[in-house]
Length: 181
Image 1: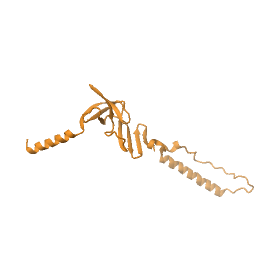
Image 2: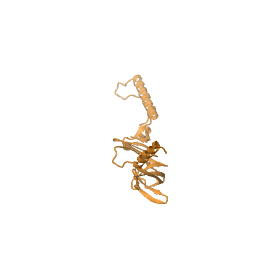
Image 3: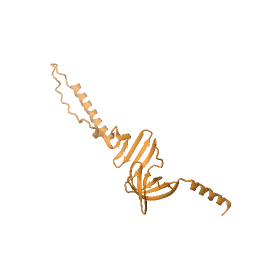
């Protein structure tokens, strides 16, 4: 081996030795929570409280992928400390948590919820437009009928029959419950 190759080899070994990730192990995620899980391994002790994010501080922004219970995972062991590990890959996803500043999103099998879903679901625009077209049609009909029916001079009400096309709207008529904000 030449001098250049030897210097490159030593430089690579030096950088690799300084790496925080010292090993990757595989196992099965159990006792899954939003920020941690335990990892059962064949023929090895359970890894407890394995992080789902590499940094475990109180983060203002993050994306956390929460593995499905009993899914296969790969875990990076940090600084060769079995008590310091993070899930880096998984076979199944239970949910994804996202936070950027004060905005949050959670996606799971039930749908997508923005900022805890306090403002309800998004409108289903085709149904909303169809309903509004019926309201518009009703208003045009009422306008025409009022223009063509004389008002009785004796104080009696108009003998006008007005049959609407619309029903009283309900939130569920327009709400897409899969997305909440």
